[in-house]
Length: 304
Image 1 (tube, rainbow, N blue to C red):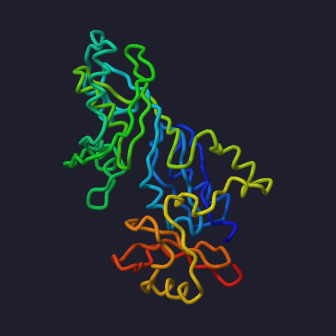
Image 2: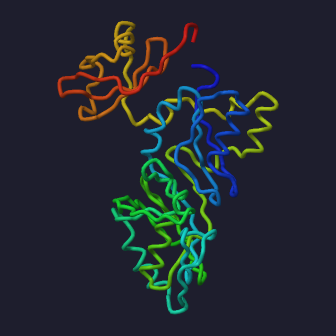
Image 3: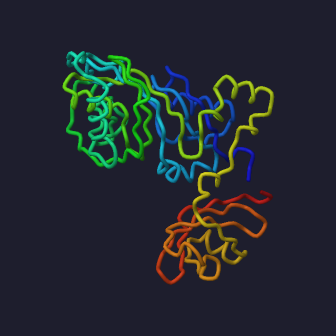
């Protein structure tokens, strides 16, 4: 594996876009293949996995993991952006809301729920981000979708502020959750602050700040913060293949792994490694007869 292949667990500070973090890592590392998994709003902070080099090939598998957030929601006002940066669109009186009513209302947001993304979001409509259209005064219809709230805990209730800890699946907008909570309570609400404390295996306790990362690049020890590509794929079974199968994998040919995977017979994906320990990519089950199709192939140059 080359030195520039891997994943950084960065603690994004508030006030910076996720894209600006990627641009900074590109500049510091000199690696052009850099991408992040799971955009954080500029005002939000916390865990932002940034993939370098060949690790950008597995971003989609990282996106599928659960995330945990610590959110502060202000009751009594709603905004067009669903957060503190927006224009106030509704004002209400939250003084009659007690902890019991709050807990009952929160219960309706646990499990699989239908959610409409904010108009000010990075989702695209005909190639244009929704926030670009919204700033131009163009509002397009947004389709609601099912998202999964695995855990929703009331951490503190200091009227009119609510602090929640939320563990959720992909595609969940915490801003929409804040807005919808305000509508359910009848007083309006917006997201006052947000910290992503966990993203899959990456925890904020282990995250590196941008100042720490810049210093590490300056003094040449930044690789200390780099996680290997396959660390986010540990839930998949692993197989070791020979040189012939490695060549077949590069060509996209089907592989027979009947003798390699005896357990997890219904598992959709598995990790493939060479006999000398190189991570070769991800295989996807093609049939129920032990045949596997290359899904993501990691190609190494000579000498790597």
